[in-house]
Amino acid sequence: MTDKQEQITFDTNYAAHYREKLAVRNLIERSGWGPDNEVGVFHLVVQIARELRLGPKDQLADIGCGVGIFSLLLSPMVAGVQAGDYLPEVCASAAENTQGIANIAISPMDLLKAASLPRGCNKILVNSVLQTLPDDSHMAAAIDNLGSAAAPGTLCLLACNADRGQKEEYIAGIERLNFPEERKARMRAIHRAAPWVDRDVVASAAERAGFKVVAMSSPPEKLWQSWYMFHALLEKA
Image 1 (cartoon, rainbow, N blue to C red):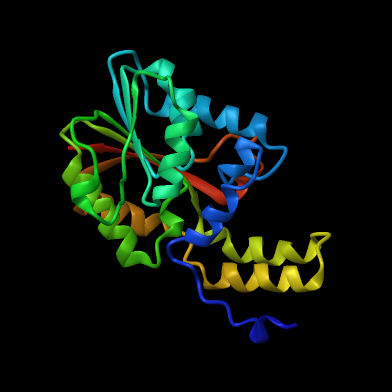
Image 2: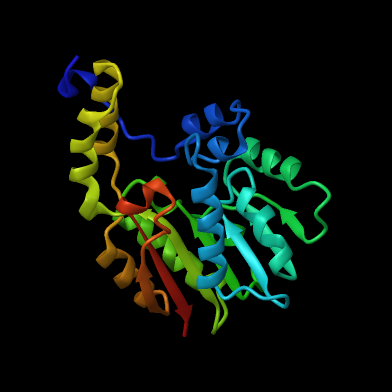
């Protein structure tokens, strides 16, 4: 089967992918970070806390929280966490995983629906979400909605964005995987169809939304995905 024969349509909502992940027992893998990646994810939590400068008085919004693992691990560092995702099943899983943690509240959130985003949080985390949107215009709209929700001085970390500049190298590397040829062909087709994230698009959209780009950085090296991802730390003017 060739890539041309595969005929992939990019699933802009990632709905099927995340619903399938809900059946996985391992919480790290269920979160979308792959198996045997626990240490990398824990290092990522530390870096997120440092970049957002989290402290005991902070109110954190975790937008696109998935099954709630980052909300859970960051909750002891802050006064409160408002977390959510756009899929009801994923929100339900996050609520189950964070049950009993008094300072975490889970509710539906969608980056493309400004009214669903929480207000009153001085720190915002959007972790590995932008690349699930269909194109640059939707990414820009999402960042604009974040700008509408953020008060002046709010720090917003767009974490673990799949860097469009690394896309072709990633696709080329699929050939080296010890997978059946049919699976590799499908992977190549999916990633060719996926938009990935352009740093300049993020920077321009952030400035239009009233943010200052504080820094762009890489995730921790312990996270195996770090080589093709980047973080963008923004501050609302």
